[in-house]
Length: 468
Image (cartoon, rainbow, N blue to C red; front, side):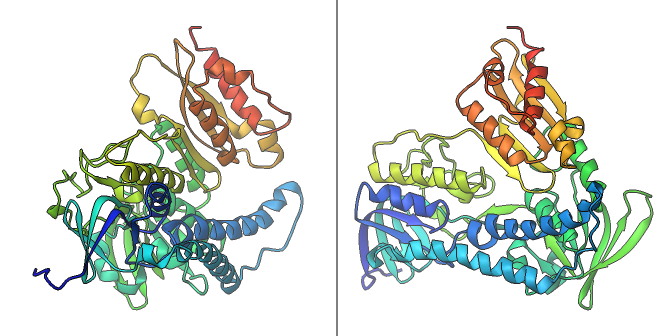
């Protein structure tokens, strides 16, 4: 292209993407220089606030309220079957979602006009971006473009009967039925919530796994628990799928009786993962080495792509699509972009992920897939089925595995399903980050009667296997 009449702006740092990674990157880089620009082509508001963590928890909270009415009978408290008003449920979800999004938008709009541009950016080379009709030359660039739901080709014919999680939060009421494909974090959370809100669901998986779990003992237990509540086939045999009017007809082999069945659903929810938004960035015009998905190879400690002046953070790098990880990565990337060529290793916290299904699923520290087969690893086990406080609350479903080093007693990680796993997971992540041993963890206070006593039981089981 002829650039003779194109306006060119020179900056120290350009951040592409104003989401959960881009905003911390911008703030971190701004500590080093005022000559910085934040570029965003899409809607302000972050994946978390708009279509992720927050609206999904709003839907789950409504589902928990409905479920608690039904579960009350177990205590001898009998209430009429809850009447679920879909319009009221989705009205609150959208109102509160808009409130969270509003806070994020307010934060972006408070950034001085000179610092942000509402246009699409694409690389012309390592230091040059085409931004709308203008050119931006930047000493360093941070890619923080987030991710989008993956929709497999087999769903292409379903038209507006196919939805992704983003679409659910714009519903004005609840449908009668939804088929969910993908028993990962999104599929499990939304599938169970819809079921508890009176929507007929069926959850189909392909590989037999229940992501993000890698410990087959925990995974098999979790599958069994969820199958007791709603139809779940983690290794489904789908024979056909076609649109019929305003519904989708799915032909499949029923897991329980092996009989071929036909079922119609109002919607098909594709919860089959997310893909980094890197395809239209013009990365082929840079010197960056890309992986099989087109994502730049980068250093997870500094977020630097190779030895270039380009950094990548958040969902765009396809490693840990979690808000707290995106924020940490954004800060590290922005800080290093601002101080370039000086590069500093950023502080990475202990891995922590939580699935807000019921019972909740959590993973802390090293996953079992990283430790399996190592002779020096011991596994402590504990069932929540007999755990005192869990039984008191009729929440006694769950299984915990703790991993430790046999010789040193160092706590390595855990995968588990259980009541209030979100809180137990935080205790464990703090212990992991502090590099505590199992004996040190057992010296910590445990109140009675609390769910944390179950964690102590598991720690004792590990402790008995140590060679200290």
